[in-house]
Length: 461
Image (tube, rainbow, N blue to C red; front, side, top):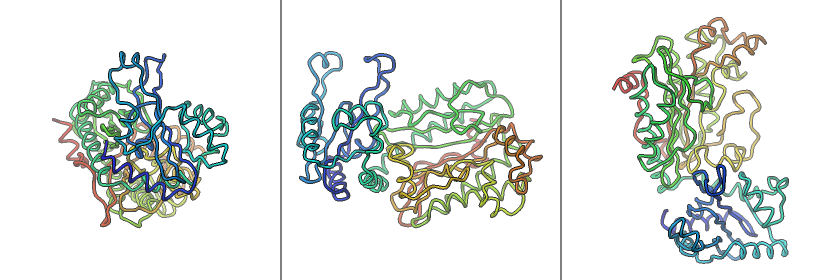
């Protein structure tokens, strides 16, 4: 945990941003895999962690905006619980670590919420995303599961987003630690990739590297020779000559801050000519996007710059044609790059995604409906303190190629005959994490091998 004063200051800032009523912040519960005493790995709610820092199940927090008071509620363990779990701090002891003096049981909290409802006081809560959240809201404040999503407080969402979006120096230190662990995970993978091994061998080694550093996985690892499937969590293929291996893996450190990196590595000792030309086009787009990062720049413009750089490079090797500006404006490049250039990162690898992309990445403004562009998670103007990823890629998705070719879609911009030679290529991307600074930007963590020469050198060790 951070110093209690940090959590108290965060809650005070939240009080200044949100008007009257109560803020109810739900902690998470243990979630059973197949029976109660065999739960999944516990993960606390990120907003609860941000404002209270307490990393244990069964807790809830109330911030009284009218009286300016904070409270933590939960049930102390029984002696029988202690027999199985060992000594655990009391609710009061836990709360003191977050700078909170007022505590009580869950039953006492229910009475407080009941009284607030009887007085028609506003009870603010964030969007629920777990089954127990819906049940708690039903029991505690009388909002049924079918109405809970509509009952969330937009005012609170906006307040939390604007606060959590700006990372304090203590958070940047934690993110940087997670990124450094993530770099080591990628180096581990690069050093073992060769023909004959299984994808699962790489995924296992990457997970071990995270655990050995005291961390965990920030998200399910993508370790695949089929990088054209953007979220490919299948690890059952054996690596063979001519493949290119895509690894998207990141660590979550002890404080639950995330790193998020991607690497593309030839299974052979060297890139093939086809792999080299595609890798270099994607790398140039990456460099262009990174170079544009600065306060005041809209991330939408960063994305479009990456798209134009990709389209220009693809045109130079004969996969695209025509006017690059027009091709990107119409969305033709999305055949090869159907996703966004990056996203916010922090306590969540896609930071605050449960609060709504429209608020986190778009400040409440509508998103594009264009294929490819609609998948951009972050479009807003960048500010000092933002932490984000940059991850343009090139993907050859056979089903998408076939559909568009049959429809003659964007035939003026796409050389489908030339594309056929790449249909089984897979996909490539490099991904790094950056802090927006008053002067521009800073790479977080130690550098990851990225150039052709660096990747080939490491993968041969």
